[in-house]
Length: 129
Image (cartoon, rainbow, N blue to C red):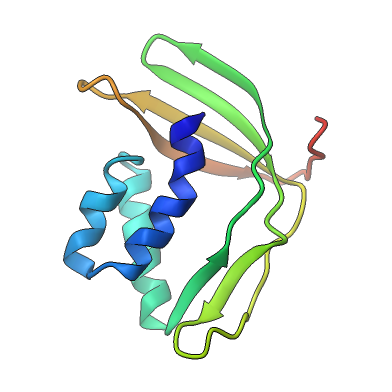
């Protein structure tokens, strides 16, 4: 779960880094296909002059580990996070509560777990789910 919790702060560090430094920052917490998806997302976000602000409250449940693969569910509260204008800092969007995410994590040859996929479930959840 630690690497999943580190995913969001790492993404924000990568947003602030030079484009050529982003992959190295994200490779510590993400692997394909999520790694490429995050790099594309950051580039698109920065191209519009935006950054993310805040961070989600993570409520993980139903963690399952089988050999070198794990899945976990998160009933995320993103209401204290969103996108902001990079120059002014003005908050432009904010997330919602009850976002049900299912993440797949893979254990690398180096023994470290990394997030490979994050998918949103259509049905909302509650943190006590």
